[in-house]
Amino acid sequence: MNRSYTAVIKQDADWWIGWIEEVPGVNCQESSREALLQSLRETLIEAIDFNRAEALDAAGKRFEELPIAL
Image (cartoon, rainbow, N blue to C red; front, side):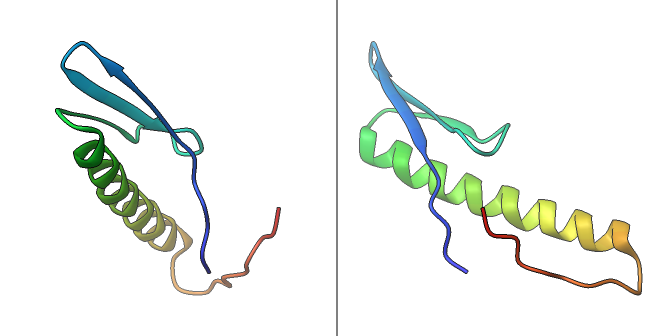
């Protein structure tokens, strides 16, 4: 399932800083806009993978996975 996320970015002096609106804790700082966007993508993937692993671990052995559409 492909999902879009929203990056909120801004330049602050010599740095670019950004956040992913939909996922708390996904934020980065880089020296260029392009590097910031790449860091946000990588950090978002890591956060989603971590959250998924944590959810599966908490669910235990018998569970269902179902897509939820918004």
